[in-house]
Length: 164
Image (cartoon, rainbow, N blue to C red; front, top):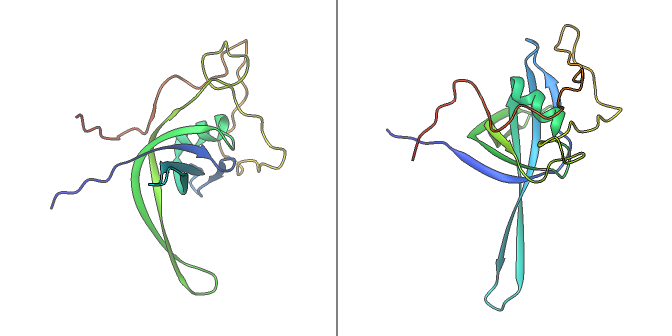
């Protein structure tokens, strides 16, 4: 049986990324994208639908998303649709679809002074929790190093490309 599971979305973040760590200290970043669809009705009225999509990223991608993205910024994601099921505290079974991010690209104009050629790190909210003990720690760039992420598309290692 043939199957194909690929999702490509471009939208704006509806809230700041939520970074957490698995017990293995693997970073996990949760984001929610708002994707708009605009059209005209037969009588010429402009209409718009908004779809909110939960997305998840792991590892270095999760840390980069958390460092450079904030609420309202546009993002292009490519990944696969994943179906999650769990039992809520009240005993009811719950489920939802989510996009597992395999790669992403920053969209839009660079932030900051406009000379760096990329996104500047987003300011950190004061209430953001610190990583668990022994978790990865990152310092700001030193010696005038550029503050933008390494260029281009962020691809999860081992991801497969289907050329067409």
